[in-house]
Image (cartoon, rainbow, N blue to C red; front, side, top):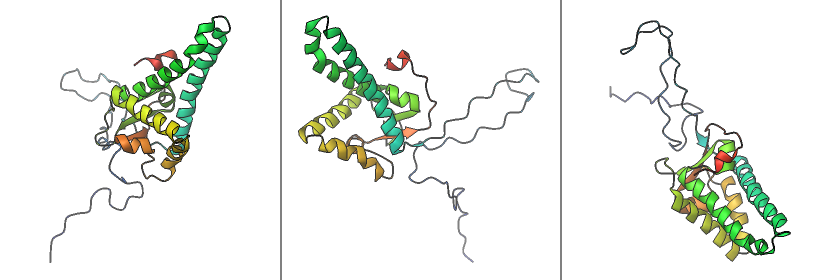
Length: 201
């Protein structure tokens, strides 16, 4: 009679991991027992248990579109404000292109440095490295956005359409520019309230 190893804990689970990340789920926290003795504190002094780790998953297509729509609304609102101000100060109208590039580039920087543009923060999404779940870095975030914009313009926005629909066929819901930079968009983080603080790097 030959010995065989016991089945893994995830064997036969319908909700088990598909491709490992997001990000190697942390082991469950021990249950909180009021009045339990601690090594450093007195007995019968309950402490607040730490919050459970977020349940992460790959962001679906609808979540990504919603986050992009929020970010696009911010850029559009900035351009509208500039247009209204240009009615009073003529030279401001000439700055519209630079303001658009700067605003989109800054959102790319936020996606790389913190993992979250305002739209992603509101929906609890993050852009992370597929390899280890860390942030891409601000420079890589800007390059990721710049490549998307450049290829979209060079193909008369055909690439933009293909890139936007690509997550529908990818198992990890990645767009083409995610694949280029080894990135994924992950859902399950706490959702932030809309505020100007979301624009801080």
